[in-house]
Length: 101
Image (cartoon, rainbow, N blue to C red):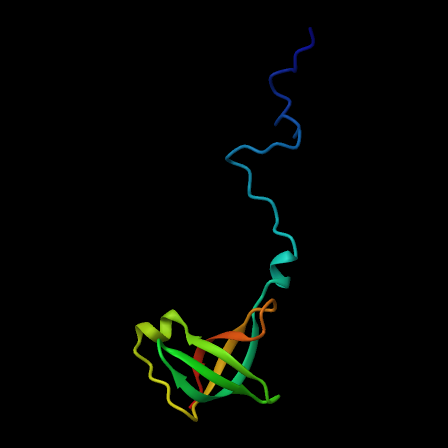
């Protein structure tokens, strides 16, 4: 039976971690799922805080207000320029995050 001497330092890692080890590093996959930032102009106000927004490229997307804008009662009207976040998976919908004026 081979025992370790008592003063040899920490036990070697076997791929497992205990609750005191730092969490593993995140992969670069998080950067791939970032939202796409775009600017546009509100062309129509729809029911339920939904808006039709025209992009500089000529495309129109359906957008809704972010929670912080809703919380601060920021009003949007036709003609306002807005900054939006779009998912790279569905480029027909967006979330309005900032009113430019």
